[in-house]
Image (cartoon, rainbow, N blue to C red):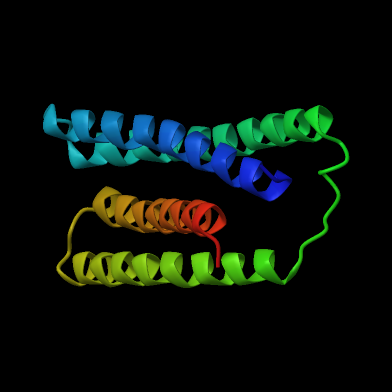
Length: 143
């Protein structure tokens, strides 16, 4: 497995874990009868914590991957890597666009702010997950 594949897999696991926790606890908060104002305050804090958590975890994991195989850590992207990255970006962009439309529709129908914010964050996360899965499939299957 190349450095790019290991990095991609690590980011996929981190994003699913961290944002899985975030969205699960957010749904539980809202379904538990939390008021929209309280949900917005809690959502703001949890969003900051999860973003910082993803950044910190990705730094630690990438350092560990680079230490484990220093010869692979140099950036030697070939045409295949660039094509796989482009295809992943394209597929993830479609998902992000869909969520952007949902968020705009929610904002235009005067939905609570935390719902619109979570749709935007959900679109970013879903787009990155689709991108990562697409890249994994392309690396394994070949382009």
